[in-house]
Length: 315
Ligand code: PYC
Image (tube, rainbow, N blue to C red):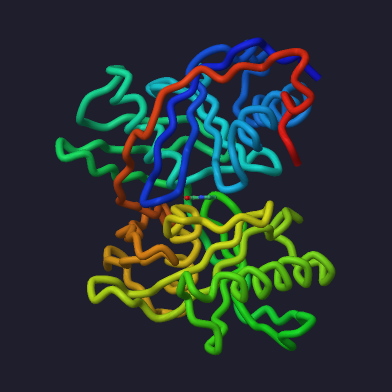
């Protein structure tokens, strides 16, 4: 475990309502030469540090952190390790959009295309002159259809397991409205499903935990095709439509013949915000594109007083 530096500089933003905190200075140099190695280094060596940056009292449960590193691939602008309130994430769609707007805010990029290395692969992003960001995610896929689990209080729930940079279970609970006023029930149901998946040993293709749950429902907005509630691994819900979740959703819809290559999928979130996505096919892979907007909300220096009993965050 590394000792905490005294200060860390961050830029905060939100993407369609979901916050991202980009670490721009103060983090100890990473020793690993691969992005997977840097993710593991963040989880182990920098455990106290990511907790201090993202958890209360400096952050909160819904915040996603993004540590910028030097790139590992030729042609990439930077590496990024995303982390939430329980540790590193594979990829993060809303976070990538937040990173792009942050780099623009810092004067490091302008409108145009760039590539970013993540622990699960290199992703692309394009910043338009009006601030809209389109990301090109890692390949998505539907791993298993109609997977049933017994959920205490809900009974038998059936859904698909799909990958979009993180692992997702996608289900419909017709009795539960995807509305902010129903958040407590959605939280309880999706937490129940998360636990049932763990107990039933439902995993990704290589045994990865299926730790994100998407509850899908009809849209409220007239310009959307579906609305979701997305439970993240640590119990927070995504305020945005979730970039990796929308990628997984599109792969599952495509596997069912319900979404053609190139067809737009407009995903509304529980908060009413929107991502527009579509799938491209390349070399047998399904490449999701996700479009959305982020806004910089602040730039600050976090202080870690050695006498502060909560400098490692409250968990
Ligand atoms: O946008 O991919 C996403 C995401 C993952 C977790 C929170 N947001």
